[in-house]
Length: 207
Length: 304
Image (cartoon, rainbow over all chains, first blue to last red; front, side):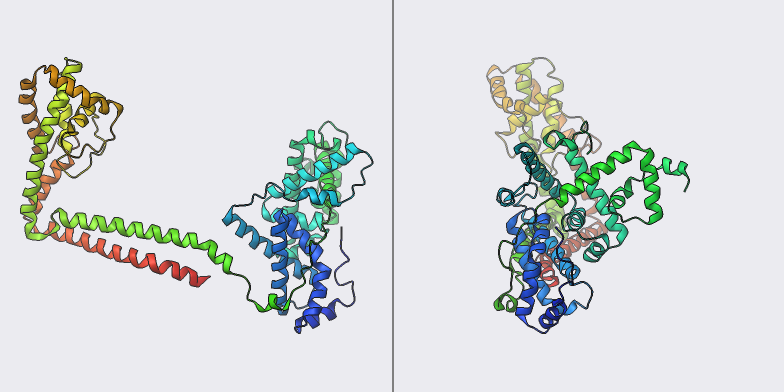
């Protein structure tokens, strides 16, 4: 899940510098590098492909416009912060429209079929797909800040410190958001335990 | 940290940070000690680990397209148009709301002007009002009679009480004040009779016509045909109605009160000036509402 750690590619600082000088090609090289994690953050936050696409595009446009505000540090964190803000903007916009319900995940079927599931048996495969659907529904019900923290830590694999930079709050706040978010997800999954793999059934043995 | 205190408080708030290795060494060890003895917290930790595992097993979706920017994407200003369009309903709503307030204020203002706010004419206006009130009362008599008929026709008893009740509903009509929920609410039949009677007269009592009110019409017609004791009732009703009209003490007689007090204040300049002040205040409020209705949306739009 975790991408190549930020800055590990030696040409990144040079690309940033050239992009800051107005080199669109250099910036687009950075876009290609980060568009998948950015899109996935947006997708998990917004729950549907189309808004995720919109937010991703807006994030990169905003990033280009604000390149001068990046003064060192981890580029990925700075970029994710802009992406997070694009997500919040998009959610606010959707809320006023109230057209799309975040509760029903969209376009999941394509995604599920995309990914080859390594489950050995059909039953396990079905359970896993079911669990994923439940998890996405549960994520969509989380408060936005908890969802963002969970997405960044558990889905994108960032550590608390980087999430604190992305979300611009203290480590303690991140810790509490992660804890409350996970506790809610767990409660949600346990409520639907009959749909889930045996490990989530209260009677089931923990592996 | 003593083992006792560890047991006293479950470290539930730290369990996620614990499995993520984000606690200080000391705290981590303390939680570990607690978990060794607390099955509930250990079970929660297991669930959290599985939740985390399920989350990190969520597949990373490949970007559906390239998000590389084109030159015109960075040339065009950030699309703010849809944003503004969304707010249009809100602005429109504000305009409607303030326009509604303005209209309401205008109505109050006009009503107040017409209602004897105009200095010297107050006396004549008032007396005209009284004339109208008397006229209305005569209509009320009729309706009261009808009501009483219906009462008499239907029940044939209680003909003594029925007229007073209907007289009350009739009494409320002369004044412009709506009947604000009579304390001694007339019995349904009485209201029905009154309303049924007014169908031939003017306007109607403000209270919503109840099913019995609908019945009142035909009932009174029946009563007319059967004509139990029309003269007796007609003799009773007018005097009672007139008494009620000029007795400020009876029931919820806001009208009677107003007639009296206004008659006094019409001789008194202070009363008039307060009226005028009230009108000026209303006019200013009206102007502010109208100006606000147009300016506030623009001001808000500028803020964005």
